[in-house]
Image (cartoon, rainbow, N blue to C red; front, side, top):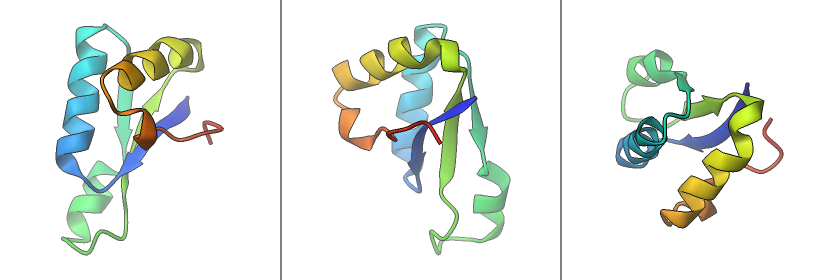
Length: 76
């Protein structure tokens, strides 16, 4: 898996997830529960992970939707 997006913005995360769902691109949200536990401080961002095989399609999809600036580079 690789990191596609990292953010504290729940609206951004849910929008990206909805786009990936609609395109049937599998994904997993890391750190969701840790982020909730720490409260509203924004110290622990959520990470949207995808399979390496889906990277090109996922990046194209989110870029076309106007979210390209939010994408992580290098897929840590």
